[in-house]
Image 1 (cartoon, chains in turn cyan, green):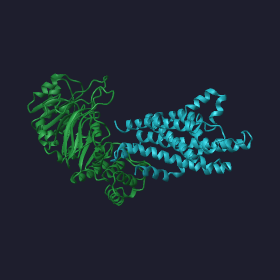
Image 2 (tube, helix red, strand yellow):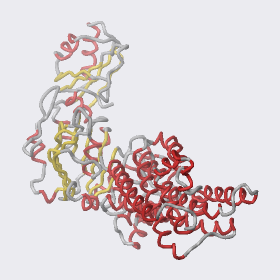
Image 3 (cartoon, chains in turn purple, cyan):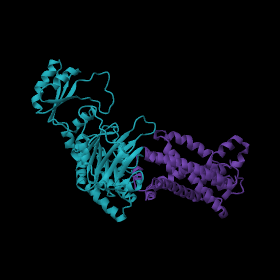
Image 4 (cartoon, one colour):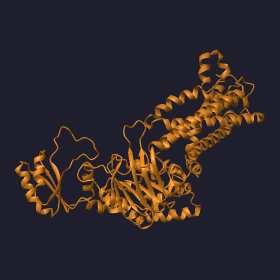
Length: 248
Length: 360
């Protein structure tokens, strides 16, 4: 029922939801994949390697956006969540619902990116044999985003959220290997180390492994292990933050 | 804090409050209680003192119970513990016989909360606010639709059912929140300062609805710093200050405990010493004299301005007869009378008597 409330609100605000989650990856795809390619400023094949990266970006960012801002508002000033916290169900159900909802929105947004990609690029790289890895990467990417979202939504003071958002969001966006494959960074050793610290890198690399295996990428099993570890750490931190706000 | 701690009245002024009387009012049979609190303590992390410091009381099913005290007295924290949002440091809190710490889910099924500030869901309409609330509480679909219409009608909200709560006034939000709280037919309804900040008409409307609820068998726990509201609605009132329960009884019994028939409040233009107070106390018919301090919430009075003289006389007889003699006493001490208020004692006088300060 609590999940139904969130789905219901999303459905009623569908255009806003689509704009919020699709505008950024759409423009990145359009400018880097289409415009620069048409101008001959990128090498042929760049769009193929960019596309899985943008799916990873969409998966992670959508999940963060689903939780971070709404939670800050719901705990901070609208207090909307109180009615659900006072409902006769364990508090863990409310948190589980939030994570599940972030996962759902994230998957929907990424799936919508596929037809968008076909429209913008004409064709997208696709391998059915890579589908299990593709799905695992997306789900883990969404959970990483949900973890970040829970942490930001419950630990950050309402008056600081804009600052934290710009301080966390932008670096996360550009160090997640969505616009470049990680192994190619060995020219730029320090940046390669920085990007290795961003869990999103492993989402991008896993999706490249699934869709464009001919591009050098981090081995899928490494990606999965790192992601499972990141999800565990981020989600448990986020849950701690949630309980701290839910019960004094 | 062990279970053997008993209520200790902490009285700084005047006579100690008689707790034996209050104890008799507690039901012996625990199953008839809808709310029980025993030796409840809350200390927030890093706090120097307990926000709630060993509070015990019991409320019968169907009773209207007022928790009265200034801001920071511990009322909201006490209610927070009863409603499972604040974890007690020590002590027991039960709702309908269910321990809130051991089984918060079952406790929540029986209670509803109307907070002071709106926490309505702004993304959905008023009607959806009601039906979703009922759905969270497991009310079947058809029943919640019917109840929503019924309550929207009762609270005069039918024509606004499809509006979102964004632009609702304080009074309207309050009505929606009370209607929402009633959607799952709670046994205990907590209301935090239900009419603070409402205009007089909205306040009367809310009071009327609460009186109707009183006549059904819902238990109401009302926290307020409005003495009139408490006296008007509550069957029994607990007075809290500094995390402790100072007194608990019916409003009439609390007022009777002051043993006076009338009060006379006097204000003069200048500060005065104890001699004036003594002289006033010696007048015939004066039972007791208590200085009235303006500081309501324990904050320090403005140091730059000397406080004008203000006292309240508790009388055995008619207040009007004492105005002239009292004015004469002030004049003898070189003070000019600025303000006179005659009255029968109220709950506020009980509060001043117990804590030595005014609520407002």
